[in-house]
Image (cartoon, rainbow, N blue to C red):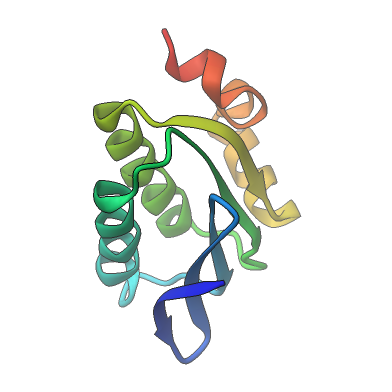
Length: 112
């Protein structure tokens, strides 16, 4: 596991072609947290990755915003997103925003 970002209460790391977010993502950390993933995505030579937010226990539109920023970079770089994993609170928020298809089948949805 490689730590990419660490602040009290939240971390971003890379492990086995997966960007992992742990902790409560709030607005004060969003830009730095997103930037850490963007930097890694711009440097990686991987062509397929997963995004794991399953350890984010607080539903937050900020976490969803970080996810979208990373998805934009993946799309620009031609990196296929194999899976998006969300915690139950984030899954409920994503469902309210009608993002179910994107979360369940990112490769198919992003290919459109």
